[in-house]
Amino acid sequence: MGRPVYVDSYYAASAHAAPVRPALAGSLDCDVCVVGGGLAGCSAALHLAERGLAVALLEEQRVGWGASGRSGGQAIFGVAAGQAKLTRLIGAADARAVWDVSVEGLALLRSLIERFRIDCDLTDGYLLTAVKPRHERELEAEVAELREIYGYSSVRYVQREELRALLATERYLGALYDTSSGHLHPLNYTLGLAAAAESFGVRIFEDSRATSFSATASSRVRIATAGGEVRARHLVLCGNVYLGATAPALARKIMGVATYIVATEPLGEARARGLVANNAATCDMNWVLDYFRRSADHRLLFGGRVNYSGLRSFDAPAATRARMLSVFPQLQSVRIDYAWGGEVDITLNRAPHFGRLAPNVYFLQGFSGHGMALTGIAGKLVAEAVAGTASRFDVFARIPHADFPGGAALRRPALVLAMLYYRLKDLL
Image 1: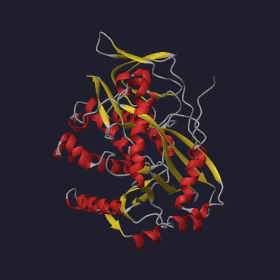
Image 2: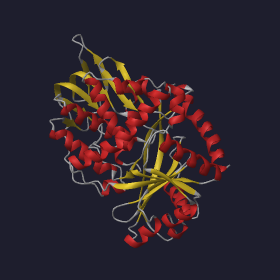
Image 3: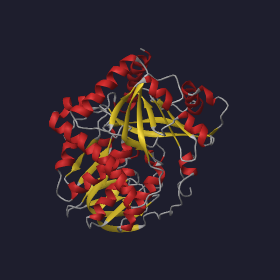
Image 4: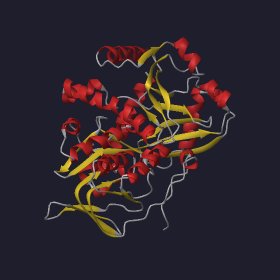
């Protein structure tokens, strides 16, 4: 079969050199086994090892192979569910605690990049844009709430006239602008976190799917792979949609949806700056949203066009390019050099899903498009919990999560029908 390879993306083509880690062979004993070599897993491994614990990380493919290494690269505040929904779910105090963690996640991302000298093109600035008048009202209210209630002073509202000077498009009516959020090269950031974890003694094994896990008589956890097993005092599951049958109870709480990105040919600095003058990451407010940003080598990276059906007949590159041209019609003659996609995990309520399957088995999943910053702080929180200080982790564990309806056979058709409703709302 050969070794796993990365999806053919702009990120893989521009990734820094990284070692090919061995597959697990034989038995290994450690304090903590982490499953999943994305941002959450690498962050958890790093923060656990910093506490002096012996850590092994199992990755089915390559480090950063999944959503962590091929996303839109937008590191943004908050969680996808929004503060109003969180308040309804867990109360004002816990919702505020989740907010504080999300903001700390942005600071942690910057500190990890600086501390470990991770070269990942980190750039400040994020625009959340209004497509219709009701979006303008919602954004103005959100800016007021964030500043007045949450004390988040890095956001302001951008009127249409100023926004047109920042984005070379007629599509948007206004925007929330945040200087604390930003964007980066997600694969290089993930590879940098993995190297940082290894510098503290973490042993990373690629091509090593965790096929099952079970408790032993000595209160340890046995994690099996095709080539061996890990015996650990604690297990941290960070595989998201790729865990599948390894943890069926978790699979019922999340759905993998496919999202797509295209990367143009290099536009040159002047032309790229002409599209996005302040080099901010940009995302609109539609349910089926568009997002884009400039790359360090002056391409436009444009994503969106979520596919909920699971059907592979969908022509993602053409559809995504068409969306790009609806925002920037002046790119009609520009060549697309890369087009790729992959699954991201969403929860039914769009809130993150953290918790335990057993006293010594933890999990992190359900980032729902906000994973670039939230995964890093999630890894820190689970390390705190393993070390015996679980108060912040348990705030997230209190968020209620329902199974996706319909069971294994009907859950995706049910989701497709629900998404048709939201697509209609985008048109109103």
